[in-house]
Image 1 (cartoon, rainbow, N blue to C red):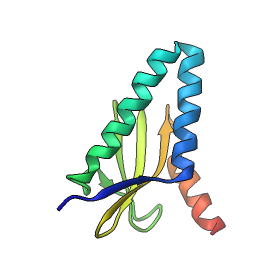
Image 2: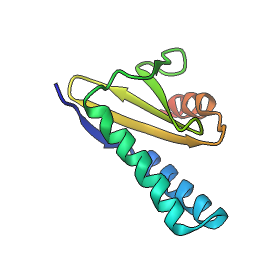
Image 3: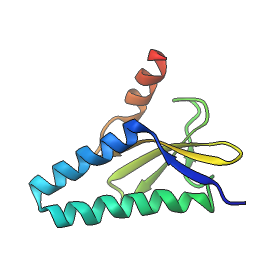
Amino acid sequence: MSHQVVFSPEAMEQLAALYRYIAEAASPPIAAQYTEAIVSYCENLHSFPLRGTSRDEVRPGLRITHYRKRTVIAFSVDAETVSIIGIFYGGQDYAAILHDSDADT
Protein backbone atom coordinates (compact mmCIF):
# COMPACT_ATOMS: atom_id res chain seq x y z
CA MET A 1 0.00 0.00 0.00
CA SER A 2 1.26 3.45 -0.92
CA HIS A 3 0.70 6.49 1.29
CA GLN A 4 0.35 10.12 0.30
CA VAL A 5 3.09 12.35 1.75
CA VAL A 6 2.06 15.84 2.89
CA PHE A 7 4.19 18.59 4.44
CA SER A 8 2.86 20.78 7.25
CA PRO A 9 3.24 24.56 6.84
CA GLU A 10 5.75 24.45 9.72
CA ALA A 11 7.85 21.83 7.93
CA MET A 12 7.81 23.91 4.74
CA GLU A 13 8.96 26.98 6.68
CA GLN A 14 11.72 24.97 8.37
CA LEU A 15 12.84 23.72 4.96
CA ALA A 16 12.88 27.30 3.61
CA ALA A 17 14.88 28.47 6.64
CA LEU A 18 17.35 25.63 6.09
CA TYR A 19 17.68 26.65 2.43
CA ARG A 20 18.41 30.26 3.43
CA TYR A 21 20.98 29.16 6.01
CA ILE A 22 22.87 26.90 3.59
CA ALA A 23 22.62 29.42 0.74
CA GLU A 24 24.27 32.05 2.93
CA ALA A 25 26.89 29.70 4.39
CA ALA A 26 27.73 27.93 1.11
CA SER A 27 25.77 28.80 -2.04
CA PRO A 28 22.23 28.75 -3.43
CA PRO A 29 22.91 25.72 -5.68
CA ILE A 30 24.22 23.68 -2.74
CA ALA A 31 21.23 24.77 -0.64
CA ALA A 32 18.82 23.77 -3.41
CA GLN A 33 20.49 20.40 -3.86
CA TYR A 34 20.39 19.61 -0.12
CA THR A 35 16.81 20.73 0.49
CA GLU A 36 15.54 19.01 -2.66
CA ALA A 37 17.21 15.80 -1.47
CA ILE A 38 15.39 16.11 1.88
CA VAL A 39 12.06 16.54 0.08
CA SER A 40 12.80 13.50 -2.07
CA TYR A 41 13.75 11.47 1.01
CA CYS A 42 10.47 12.48 2.68
CA GLU A 43 8.46 11.64 -0.43
CA ASN A 44 9.99 8.16 -0.43
CA LEU A 45 8.28 7.51 2.90
CA HIS A 46 5.17 6.73 0.81
CA SER A 47 6.34 3.17 0.21
CA PHE A 48 7.65 2.32 3.69
CA PRO A 49 6.04 4.81 6.07
CA LEU A 50 6.86 3.08 9.35
CA ARG A 51 10.62 3.45 9.03
CA GLY A 52 12.45 5.39 11.67
CA THR A 53 11.85 5.38 15.38
CA SER A 54 8.60 5.75 17.28
CA ARG A 55 8.69 8.67 19.75
CA ASP A 56 5.27 8.39 21.42
CA GLU A 57 6.77 9.78 24.64
CA VAL A 58 7.28 13.12 22.88
CA ARG A 59 3.99 13.20 21.01
CA PRO A 60 1.49 10.40 20.31
CA GLY A 61 2.06 8.89 16.86
CA LEU A 62 5.36 10.70 16.30
CA ARG A 63 8.07 8.97 14.31
CA ILE A 64 11.51 10.31 13.47
CA THR A 65 14.10 9.45 10.88
CA HIS A 66 17.41 11.05 9.96
CA TYR A 67 18.73 12.38 6.70
CA ARG A 68 22.53 12.33 6.42
CA LYS A 69 22.93 12.30 10.22
CA ARG A 70 22.37 16.09 10.42
CA THR A 71 18.68 16.45 9.73
CA VAL A 72 15.85 14.98 11.78
CA ILE A 73 12.54 14.48 10.00
CA ALA A 74 9.54 14.26 12.32
CA PHE A 75 6.39 12.69 10.91
CA SER A 76 3.23 10.79 11.69
CA VAL A 77 1.44 8.07 9.77
CA ASP A 78 -2.22 7.17 9.45
CA ALA A 79 -4.01 4.71 7.16
CA GLU A 80 -3.39 6.74 3.99
CA THR A 81 -1.10 9.66 4.78
CA VAL A 82 2.43 10.38 5.96
CA SER A 83 2.40 13.86 7.51
CA ILE A 84 5.78 15.58 7.69
CA ILE A 85 5.52 17.57 10.92
CA GLY A 86 8.96 19.12 11.07
CA ILE A 87 12.46 19.22 9.63
CA PHE A 88 15.15 19.95 12.21
CA TYR A 89 18.77 20.62 11.31
CA GLY A 90 22.05 20.64 13.17
CA GLY A 91 21.10 19.41 16.62
CA GLN A 92 17.91 21.40 17.17
CA ASP A 93 15.97 20.02 20.13
CA TYR A 94 13.06 18.65 18.11
CA ALA A 95 11.58 16.88 21.16
CA ALA A 96 11.20 20.12 23.11
CA ILE A 97 9.90 22.02 20.08
CA LEU A 98 7.30 19.37 19.23
CA HIS A 99 6.29 18.91 22.85
CA ASP A 100 5.83 22.68 23.26
CA SER A 101 3.84 22.99 20.03
CA ASP A 102 1.63 20.07 21.09
CA ALA A 103 0.95 21.81 24.42
CA ASP A 104 -0.19 24.95 22.55
CA THR A 105 -3.04 23.11 20.80
